[in-house]
Structure formats: structure tokens, C-alpha cells
Image (cartoon, rainbow, N blue to C red; front, side, top):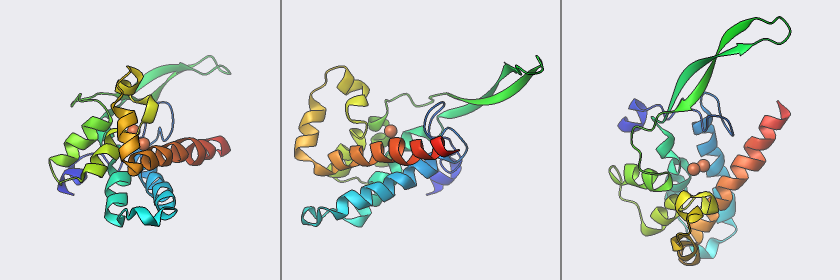
Length: 172
Ligand SMILES: [Fe+2]
Ligand SMILES: [Fe+2]
């Protein structure tokens, strides 16, 4: 908790251009994934996935994005007036370049002991968007076969990103 509070986890965006690209977007996304994952897990009571596992996995799957974004400004032309002005935007500045899901696991493991299922779920939450999976690493298929929580976490991340946050963006 001390590390979280020293980091920008509570104020960081969730991306530079896509979902949650505003202050607090990462926290909002993490809580959306918590809600969606809780819903999916509740449909499979026979799997005995604990509330603690749901919380740790969902709330911290993207902890790799803490201390990851910085703000900068760029010149933008107002088409109506022809005037240029500066607008702030987020860009990435990865000070711990260890990947994405794997980076979240590494950060978490230095503070709390994760279960094997939590490791699979956080490591592979990006599904086929993961860089290693895109490069042909077959580990993701194996992880999905042996760890239902990993499949559920990917589904929850997709639902939060594209249905909940995508829809919110659409309505603004
Ligand atoms: Fe992610
Ligand atoms: Fe995510």
C-alpha cells in the first residue's frame, strides 16, 4: 500500500490514446475489471476462486502502468481562428521495461506472494494482444487450458475496456 501511495496509481491514465486516457483512468479501469471479473467468477462457484484472488488479480493486473505515463504538451492549431495553442497529452516513459503482464507480476511479487493462478491470470490477461503471444509463444494457450481464472481475467479486461469504457467514451 505504501508503494501504491507513493506511485501515481490513483491518478494515472489507463492509456495514452485509447481507453481511460485521462487522470484516474487506470484506477477506474482496475475497478471496472474488478466488477466484471467478480461477475464472471460468480457464474462458476464450483471453481472456488476466492474474493481475495479476484481483488488482487483484477485491481492489480495493470499495475505495470503505474509510474509509466508522463504528461507533455504539443502545439495544436484551432481551425476556426487559425491560432496555435499548447495542449497537454500523455506519453509513455517506461522506467521499468519488463513487458506488460509479466511486469505486473514482477512488481506484485516483490510485495505479496501470488498464487500460481494469480500469476497465470495477471501474466496473460492481454490474451492474444500480448506481445509474446503475438510472436507465437504457445505458453498462453497452455495457461488458458490449465487456469480458468486466466481466461476469465482476459474476458473481464476486454469487457471493461471495450464495452464499459468504450461505451462511456462513446456517450461523452
Ligand atoms: Fe493490461
Ligand atoms: Fe487492463
